[in-house]
Length: 239
Ligand SMILES: Nc1ncnc2c1ncn2[C@@H]1O[C@H](COP(=O)(O)OP(=O)(O)O)[C@@H](O)[C@H]1O
Ligand SMILES: [Mg+2]
Image (cartoon, rainbow, N blue to C red):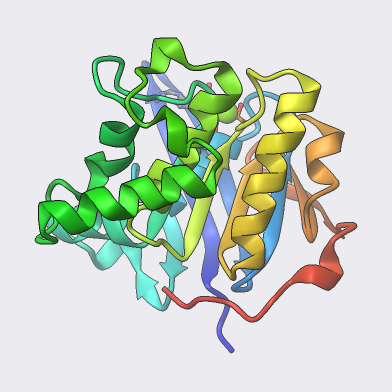
């Protein structure tokens, strides 16, 4: 089976005045469907750049990136926007919830442009809030929720369009150890359902949940090793 993600000589250069930063410097990486890939490496090594490229938030400046058999460079802006909506889900360190919206409205938000009837959308959002343990908090605004609860809302939001790939950029970075572990356990459940996870982290406790751990340095892959949960890679969703 072809890998779900395939980066070949992947490059992302940023031009800063007269100098060029090679955020990704010819990265080769294959990720199989169902993997729980942990991405480590020092600050500035290209971890977020990699997630943003895989998520279609940004475009490579060289090499190629094929996700679910689709070469992302061939997609125009509309196709890339559709890809972002349907194929991938994002979870960020800072939760990125809309402050003026309730938990339920935040979860529902990515479906507003879909043709699904409002009632079905709301039911799915409510179901997902229940799954992350926040069924009773649907009407709460982000300020009325703890950090861990906000991240759970963000995870429910990332799952609303049932993406095959979940991209998490330091998802426990703003959480205490105990809450971080709860969030990781939830992410781990989504992996056991067959989703492919890419999780950027500095935390060795988080890396323990992974089936595979890679390390980036200066935009290159410098280490690639099997994680403690390698046995749990399950039959997976294709995008
Ligand atoms: N929008 C940008 N403009 C210029 N340089 C950037 C931009 N985004 C990232 N970089 C640079 O690219 C390199 C990799 O950044 P990043 O992927 O954010 O690293 P990490 O997530 O591993 O800390 C860094 O040197 C960073 O300064
Ligand atoms: Mg980063």
